[in-house]
Length: 99
Length: 386
Image (cartoon, rainbow over all chains, first blue to last red; front, top):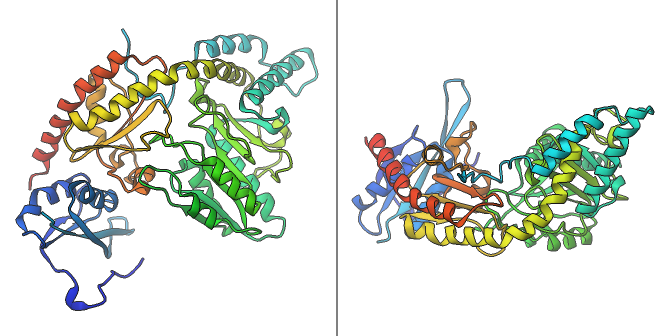
């Protein structure tokens, strides 16, 4: 478990203007939500996707590469406990609209 | 009617010659080959013939070769036996190197060693085609500390052929033995020279399920990781399935010539699928090395669909394919191969053609695929709308 990565200069840390909550949704739904909403932010602005399907860790960067959008980074969200008391990982994915 | 069974990499029907050999051996080879009576001697003779035949096909010595109960068991025994033999030579828990796209049997055995005996495991990265980074692999090798390295000849999910000769050269330089997992490539590619241990599975070459092969090279240190048993050169516990082993040997003899003959046509079919899918299906990507690959396998992913739905829909129109998407497995983990390559893991379809696949069946597949993807996309969208 690593702490969320932060940009060295606080002022440069990109702030998402829109955050999509895909927690509990299985791939490809987080990707569909991102594809549907990326045009709701302006070119150069950031959008965040919160997801807990492990496939999202690969698929969000892969979608960005396919669609020529900029994948900025993955941050780990604090692990929640699932119904059986096991830690349940979740992530926040930051994407910058390029066009 | 030609049934388009496009999942040959998961299992092939028993080769007709293997079926004949199996039936004959059930009559002649049922006795315990360790016994000295007439029936036992007959079973022993058949088992020895099968061993010599498979050893010839795989390019090893008969005394190096043992039959296991599966490819997975061959990998487990190879890995655990080689590592534990060298651990006991006062080297401590040691270190193992694998690639990120090895078969789960390799990764699970390495993980088991890590948890049981504190063995350090390095997983070498691959490029976007799934080809292991030889530099990273070589850099992970440590003389006197790395007890074993493991590499597949080719990947069974994306067909990419691995640079085994380069990795063998690196292993020789650091005096690290290499386990070569040849399961995906037997019959398609020559067995690379210079392996230390070799594992494969008869099911992948038209033999029956329940037969694997483990070869331990002469002079390679190996110790039985399970309670000692006299069978199979003291490497594999339990009474060997002589009829199944004979059938496996017969299938292997038969497929070498057949695969050499069908390889060109299959490559043309997979070339066609590789070129056509991105043209016919919007937002689809084809995976794996376009050139340096097995001829019969092609894998692609379609955005915005789940792979399980595609497999089910294709099955309903008669095409049997498989998928490395997360939703197909119970674990909810996406294919570790696609994840290591950094490519789209959802909406994944693997087509692996049998030797007799026809151009017509490939064209039919390309005809049914686009409307199915479109339909599944509509359904996913309709059910995921907030």
